[in-house]
Image (cartoon, rainbow, N blue to C red; front, side, top):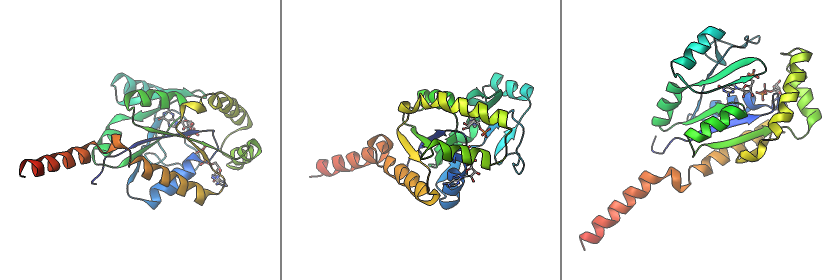
Length: 210
Ligand code: ADP
Ligand code: 5GP
């Protein structure tokens, strides 16, 4: 691809629809590469090893940390979650836009390493909708849902650290909105250093030949 890849960090309340939006986005456009995280949590029904997550034991995960195989990792509701480094670096080098769907502690750590990353925070239009989606998904026990809602309250404190607020009401509209944001990020000067250097060099040649 002829342009620089952008690192996109997507966080938001559990059940807000992050996974759903990202699946739509990656299916829509070749430019997106969705990073698959490693986790120690149990697979949900229908989740496939290497597609939703790399499911690992606690020992295996701790070994990945020790080997420096993760860009970041965090503990979320009693499980480890982390971003494998190699995939992210390879895809960015190819000019693809890499999406990390991670929680806020991880988002902060990645932003330190990749200051030009764009941070999106996904929420529902209101809390009853969030509750409906979280319970409607039917994948967690009431205790885990309660814990995830507590976590949502804590994460809400950090929203100002993000660049964009994404309200996932109509899925199609929301996916279009996210795509448009990323497209306009590509126009930023920081993501066009090479193009600028090329134009400058061409201009200099021209002036010299006059
Ligand atoms: P997250 O990844 O943020 O935890 P999910 O993508 O698993 O959330 O979505 C939670 C539930 O809400 C799923 O059952 C999903 O099908 C549903 N959902 C997601 N987006 C929408 C939407 N725009 N309208 C209605 N339901 C949605
Ligand atoms: P879930 O169990 O619902 O799939 O994910 C729980 C939370 O962990 C979500 O907020 C999700 O964004 C986050 N998460 C998933 N993968 C990673 C990761 O690699 N690193 C971090 N820090 N958080 C992650």
